[in-house]
Length: 350
Image 1 (cartoon, rainbow, N blue to C red):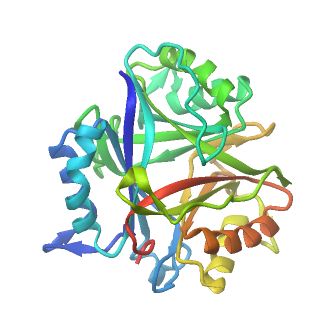
Image 2: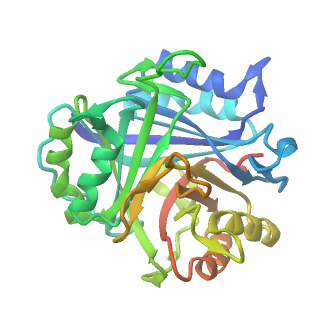
């Protein structure tokens, strides 16, 4: 498979309920029923939404309703019928819809995607199983190593707790090795380098499933390369839905600002500044720039795992948020910007 697809992303709360059950479970049931090629539910470590209530795993009383991010990727014919159901199930959460290229099976060389408003760099997402292995090492480690050798700017491996793989529901259980529970590796790099590495990735994985999207790199290792640009008020090609900016900030929990991890400083500053919402996901492995791939190690007091923070709002508000992010990532991190048509014009992680 090598065709255009849609990526449906939902941001909502862990304890959010709909029709007497948790919204997350109902949402993943829907993806399973529709046989979505790849979907993944990830539990955030920190975030806030419309009511600006901070949710963090650092405090017990605030960790009972952590932010969730659910991503579903498949062809337009499979994703479009899910619109109304996903909006209903996520309620006061935020739902965004983005176009992408979906690759699976035997991966052939891919011509570069048509340049768009999001920029000329590319985001590659590799969908894997939690215990999948390649040449006797975890597949996510092998993927990150290959991407770094090929000069990709950065990659982050993120664990899921539920999802679908090749249309079948894969849910984490307390007992069991959870080998097929989805995880993914997100990588950012120049479009030319990303497209060239795709056949190698296809040969590396047992059942390759990849998606490609255009992005704009705003900062890398403290160097500003651009700023979020102006956008029209709505996307004529997406049913007139409002266009928002999505900033993604890739850092490490070891990167500090005034004694606290950069991603926590970003969330707190943006919350105080009145930004609509922000969500942080904790990675398990990854690299950025020339730094060696890193993650958790046994017998280590401090954590060196990657962190990915997402901020979505209208262009004007994101421009103000970028000023805060620019200050806090003065010496480290990777910052990208994308345009996203909002399916439901509501706030993140309410």
